[in-house]
Structure formats: structure tokens, C-alpha cells
Image: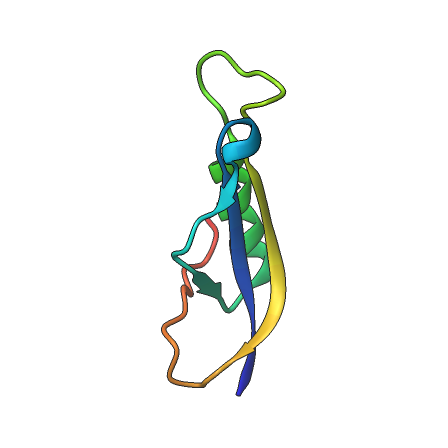
Length: 73
């Protein structure tokens, strides 16, 4: 097992908000947070009901789990 950061993405409008099932794992918290920041951007007409929650959680995964390991420029 290795320590990584899992991206959690919750999308939807009002009561229809739900977590996105596809899970991304990152070796670096900086890369995970940069990805979360970009995913949280909203275009168009934002309302309090139309929100995106994105955050990175530390977790353990098997050493064979695919990881995103792209450096930030």
C-alpha cells in the first residue's frame, strides 16, 4: 500500500447533487489541488443551487493502482 491523494468531485443542482464515480489518484497534493481548482470553475450563470465541490483526500491504495504524476509548470 502507498499513500496518495484521491480527488473527490460532487456535482449537480439542488437535491440532485451526487459524487462522480470515476476516481482519480494523485501522487502529489499540489497536482491534486491544481486539478480540483480547475474543476471547480463555473462558466455561465452560477446560482447557489448549482455548485461543484472538489477536494483531495489522503488515502492508501495498492502499489499497482494507476496514479496521475504530472508535474505543475
